[in-house]
Amino acid sequence: MKARHFLNTIAVFSFFSLCVVSANAQQQKRRPGVAISQAGAEALLMAKVEPDYPEAVKSKEIAGQIVIAFTIGEDGSVSEVRQVAVGLFGCKSLNSEDPELQQAAIAAVKQWRFVAFRLHDIPGDQGKPVEAETMVALPFDFRKPGAAASSAPTGTAPCNPRESDTEATEFAQPRVDPSRPVFGAPVIEPGRAEEMLAHRVEATYPQMARIARIQGNVILYVLIDKQGHVANIKAMSGHPILIQSARDAVKQWQYHPFQLNGAAAEVETPVVIKFRCEDDGKRCTRESGSACRCAAIPWSSLQE
Image (cartoon, rainbow, N blue to C red; front, side, top):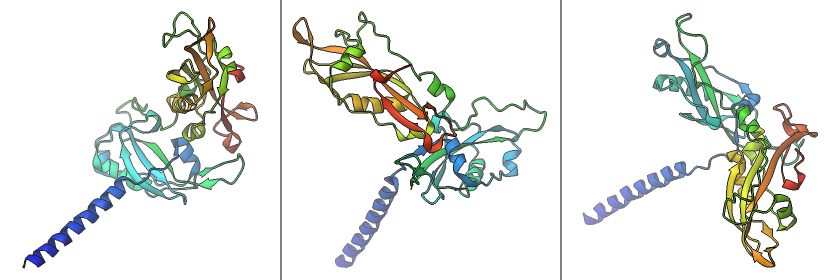
């Protein structure tokens, strides 16, 4: 009797363990390493099904948008479809709390089909199909004609980078003021500091920024210790997507030790990493495609 009870306990425990392992595996499923904007996804779209909203939803006479996140597979199929409150580039769901509305939008997107997104190692090559995550904002307007303003509700926008995201910070230049150090150390002109650079690691252009054509200058203030190591970094300006890449590179830089009055000294200086996308020497547009080359450029190459 005891043996049977013991075996039953093992069976229950084993089943429970398998459930836990299965759940953890699903939770730890790797997210795609590439994210593309709504405009990028729409350029790959082959077949689109519009949401079939129930009459019960339409009768509420509301307007807004619902943001749907999903993964485009290597074969162009759609998976991991879900509604989100806030999507890429700040797009937001608005007036979309109704479960039936959400179900209708999700059911439609599940039927979409895309051309596979390809990563290109060399501009112009065939590229390799990869999974890509994206989000789309689907607007809806169930208001009766003439019953409300025809304009879209405030806050609706597709999941695309705004022009101001790149224009506002695009080619900002540092203001070097020796009387206002960031770390309390003597301030060195960036041109002179670059001459003392002994080892430089180039910044990597973030894949998401490359796809979205996000570019601009990242300005960092760097504290250099008496041995020439980068001891501290403070970001002063730049697009958030680009700042981390710039920090990761600059923290590995090594300078020749600076000397003030004949002694090794701790100094600070602004560092500018210029992330620029060009198509045959001209600024990239959405139509540039694989001809667009993105690179991080050092201070000495700034010609703005």
